[in-house]
Image (cartoon, rainbow, N blue to C red):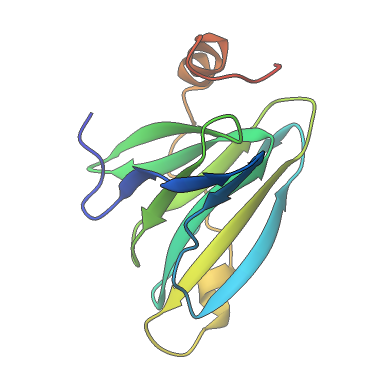
Length: 146
């Protein structure tokens, strides 16, 4: 699947020292701890002045990207540490239909002063494909309890 222009998914590099695993931090201007409640199907967000760098630290969710009039669904979980970079002006959302909340870190890169509109949810232009979301959650590649 070709992701929206500029959206990237990277497996984090790490170093193990004894029993402890150290993962590469993401350079940012601001770091936010974000909680996605269980049973959440969120509206879209479009940030004009920031790039999001998302990493799940507990739980799992489906990141939704709107690209060329279609949704792209990216499963993310704490079982496989990855960072997803979402550049400015890319509409995105979160779906967590599991029974547990999901906690993520957003290492934000600023491209100007934050504006209130950057955090105002937008109604999704058409319904999400929850059948596809269920398929992703049920797949062996995505460890989540539905």
